[in-house]
Length: 119
Image (tube, rainbow, N blue to C red; front, side, top):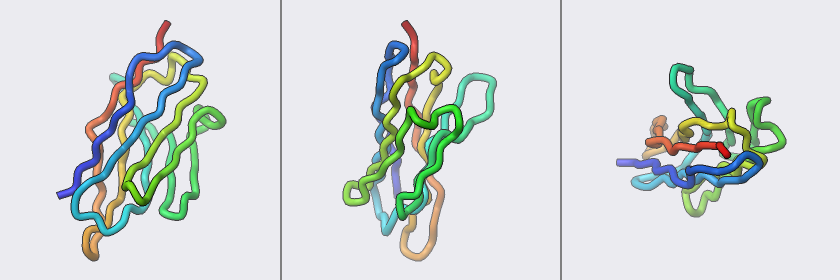
């Protein structure tokens, strides 16, 4: 079995920073593309940032220049560094990873971590 566990969410003031982590464990052969999403009540889940296995990245326009996605393949852990946070960044953040187990690739989701930006 494979698990994705997110951590690092919390309450932060506008302008502050948080770093989210997404740790994968289990029978992992490799982790391919990883994407961070966020969701607020009543809205669809939206893509925030993505990173490929070769560390190419892409970002939603709303977070470009403020958020940075990265990965540590040795630790099977992915990160989302969030700077200059705004109240509109408040959401539950989820990581999604495409993980190879033996010869097949599966999509896994973490349980989500709450980020609240408020004074």
